Image (cartoon, rainbow, N blue to C red):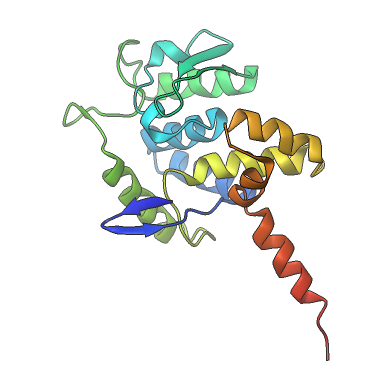
Length: 196
C-alpha cells in the first residue's frame, strides 16, 4: 500500500514494454534524472526510502551495490549487470558528471533530495503525458515491475517465486504472488472460462 495525498492506494506493476517506453520517452525529453530514477528503482528493486539514500559512488565503477535496507535492517548485495552499469555511466555523463558523493536522485536547481510526494506526483504526470497503461503508478510500482519481470523471464516458475520471495524479503511466497499481481491474474483467468 502507498499513501498518496491522504489516501491509501495499491500500486500496480508496469508491463516491461511500458517501462522501456517510459525510459525512452524520458530520454527523448532529456529528463535524465527521472530516467535514472526509473532505471535504478527497477534494477535494484529497492524501496524509495533506500533509493533516496544512494549516491553516485554506490553505482559507478562497481558490479555490486551493497545496501543496508532501512525497513528490514538487512544487508542486500545487488549485482549490477554490465549493461546496467553501462546505462548508469551513460546517464552520469548526460547529467554532467555530478560529484560522485552527490545523491543519485537530486534536484540540482533547488539543491535538495526530492520528496516521496514529489516523486509520486511526477510519476502521475508521466503516466498522463506518456499515456502509460497502469492504473495506480507510484514509487513502489518499480519493485513490483521488477518482480513481475523476473517471474516472467524465469518461465513463470515456482523457483522464481522462491527467489523473488527472498529478494523482496516477503513473509511468504503467497505474499510475493499477491505482490506481483499473480493472484488477481489467476482469478481473472478463472472467470474467462464462464461462457453462455
